Amino acid sequence: MQQSAVPELAHTQTRPIHWVATATAVAGIVALSSVLQPEPATAAQPAHGTAAEPAPAAAPPGTAGVRFPLQCGPVKAVVVKQATGDLDGDGRPETVAVVHCDAPMGTPPDGVYVLTRPADAASPRVIATLVRPEERLTVTDVTLRARAFSATLLGYSSDSVPSCCPDVKTPATWQWNGRAFLRSTPAGAHSV
Image (cartoon, rainbow, N blue to C red):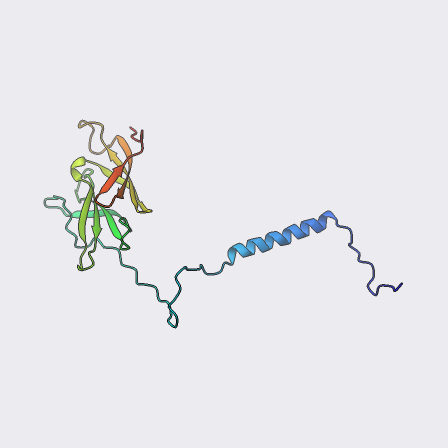
């Protein structure tokens, strides 16, 4: 029988320190792999012999110069909040603007308007009113996500409640159904 040229390996039996070292090494590799990621894959393939170029994204309509259907008298209309996204699924973004009159005192009611920029026009225009100022609501917590516009509406339980102090809070969401924006409110969502 021929003798081995390599001496007996000193660690043929595992000890707890070996398991700790192995676990630490594996954890380090997992942590490093979560930081270093390849570029995301795309499903679109370029035509044979041509380089793929992304289509230019349409710019969302801005609010500058838009005439909102709001009667402010001697003061001007002010856009206090806005959110942009593709609400109707046509590939062009819309802007939802929360607007009120720039009153020197008090809490003016908000109007919520949807703006779009038609393909054949340079300036945006109002295509829908989600909240009318006559409803005496203040709009907060504005988000536009997954083709839905959501906001919290602050209102009044009666005409005797002062305009400074809304006492009803209602979450609301609007979605395009192909013909109009439909408003939904979760059941039991009104709070005082």
